[in-house]
Length: 149
Image (cartoon, rainbow, N blue to C red; front, side, top):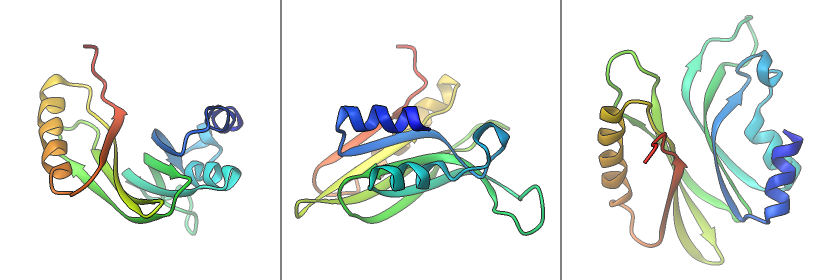
């Protein structure tokens, strides 16, 4: 986590999209809320979207989630996670949308992590185009597209 924060800080990015983000998920991330930790470390605003959401291991603990996050130097006015189509028993994917106030201008920032199969990626890509097309003004679409071409 410290290395990721340092990389972001060194690059001076104003808005960042992250994929494969744990929120109390497992031992691999020490059950941390990774998006919150990074945002607090860097003094940024953030939103998190769980695409996988499981019950806690022990009663009274936080739900275990895995998904995407957006970190921003600028205030985030609104966010919504759009579930994307999946085929069969594959992993649920989503498109995290955030409206960010960049010096008085509204930027629509979309972050995703697409499926591993070509068929699912084609469907999900069209859904992303349709969803993003509903927003007026400047847009950024980014993510892990899992495409080799």
